[in-house]
Image 1: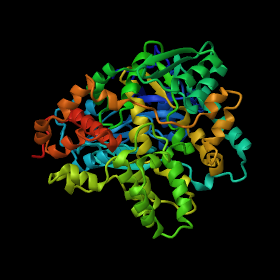
Image 2: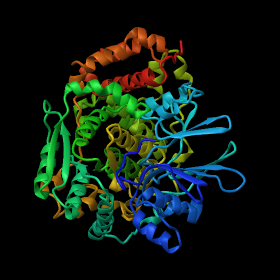
Image 3: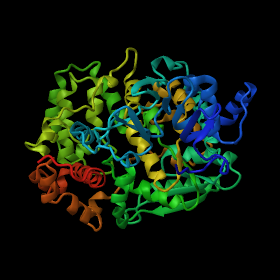
Length: 597
């Protein structure tokens, strides 16, 4: 295997072996408390020949078996072959929130595993049959939710789970559960909440800086990454290397805010440009992702990682903060809806839907902080949600809020093709609300099964690893997750803004402009780039009527109508087309002969 060496550059090569060469390990990730674990294991009589965290993980397994995972603080995908006893067994382990991906494929009585689907495809017996139901889920969510993948033969080991394979039999067990409503410390006011959360985050950031190579950070205008770099500066031996990205032809306030913090902490700051020509990287991005992601944010992420790798081998970033602190617009809107539903009769919502269908779109757009036009298509989505709001559970409203295509959309785009007849597996029992949960607690819990591991964290890992850059996410440390779960809702989300405890913690660390800036979605000028080469050429190739007809998934007439959509339709038609383009780019690299004609 090819190892990205970050800790113990000289003696940490893999695989490593233990217990008289009968137990073997390969491992992707970092365990940040490996030094403490090593000391504990040495007291138990274990002896080490390297200074790597990999060997510590191996000896932790030798000492504690499957109970070892709960002692590991970090991000990891682990494979251990244990030849002790009469039957050889293979163990696969994935970290708590799913920072590191881990795929496996059953081949008769054999099991293949890898951190990338493309590695599994190298096997001569690999099947590239595509799962049509997974395509439908992808179109709904813009990512492919586990436990399956777009390929029928490939499964994902779920976050916080381990797997034992022995002579063809498989046992999968969950070893970590996200903290629930019973974790809330109800007496915390905003000051105590800021201290509780900030203490955990500070310790996490300092742990995440452990490395034998240069460490930097991605820095946007958002408070999440700004707090991270400020905490890094507290212990860094020199100026923290920070990297921000933006579109020079479409300037916004984001990079200005990042520069303010960089100056305040004395960072070695790098402002990177993403331009129209960078869209030419989409085929390589689709290959690096292993599964399609219908979000154009992958382009600036890819460019940012590429440029940062010229300076550092490790970067810290702010992924996960919005998920554990309720930082997205849908958290706020759905929390408000849940409150309204508690005292407004169900029959009132169809009336609200009719009102939303006739008022000017410009008025509706004021209710949403998205940097793009809601348009008529967006209004139809809102009207549809309002019509169902009286009877729909929060779980359904959540999926509606984050989905790009609903069932009616998919029927329209598929015409009479097979896709229209597939059931949507993206909604399941894993999303059921638990008794005693507030709306915000439920929404946070709903993101753990697939939103975090299959979208947010997957993108961050794949886009950095594409350039041999290790991405680390301090907000996904289990102690930070636990601290966030302890915070009362009122210290996360309120009338004065979001991530309130984090903002209060940032006082004294960050410029006031950063602390007071509202949350904004990162703006990508797709509208301009879609009519400009090279993205226009990629759209023409992927959406060519002959190609679309040959693939057999979508109606060429529907595609043509979306491409001809009036700007008044808003940003949704273009985002939908981009998702389809990413799907076709994936087909080209992973399953080019797939067809449903």
